[in-house]
Length: 123
Image (cartoon, rainbow, N blue to C red; front, side, top):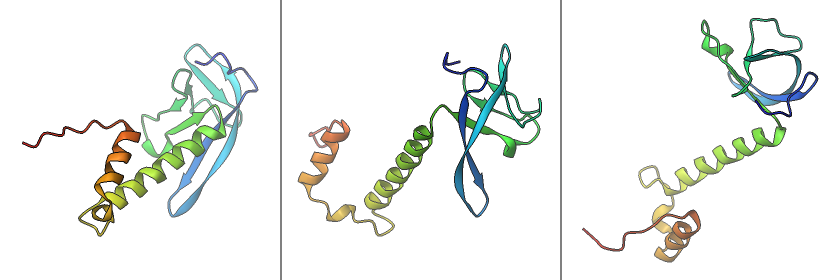
């Protein structure tokens, strides 16, 4: 567990719903136990692991959730996912992606930026 977490600490949870957008909800730490932390407004049925900041339900997986120390962590995760989707769509050669339109110079530059080593020998 991060030493930053104490009773009263605000943690952040991404609320998701079927066919709905997502919002970020603030959760306040109510109690800290040896293995779990407990949130204000939740019963003892929702313990959150101190090390991973995850609640994992053994009965119903849709009750699982992840807490974050900052809103920025959630926003960065969302941005990373969106960028990955954009790259995947751009480079998809099967689904009308524009990857074929990239020049070899553009692809080499992208590979270099991403730290991808190119084996120049053909097999």
